[in-house]
Length: 67
Image 1 (cartoon, rainbow, N blue to C red):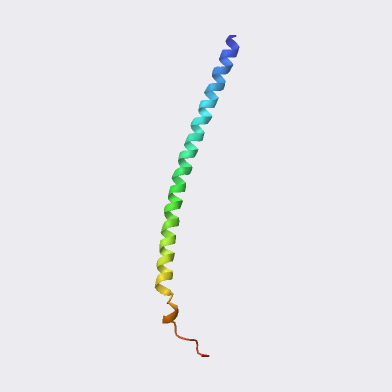
Image 2 (image 1 turned 90 degrees about the vertical axis):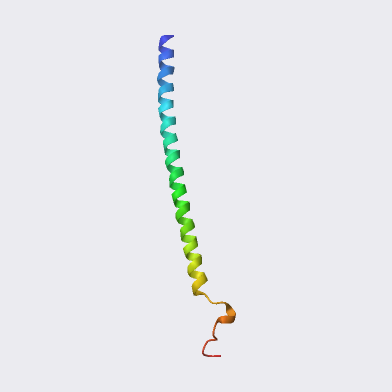
């Protein structure tokens, strides 16, 4: 009986260790996802500002030379 209890305690200890490791990985992944989302938002904003500044509306475009 003592062996079974000892075995169960060892298993629980290993499981707790793995759960803690997984929790750390989840926290790190969450941080990474947050950073990536911030970068994506920054890139989207920069892209919007570039296209807004450099693309004319159709009525502002001059016709091509062959017209």
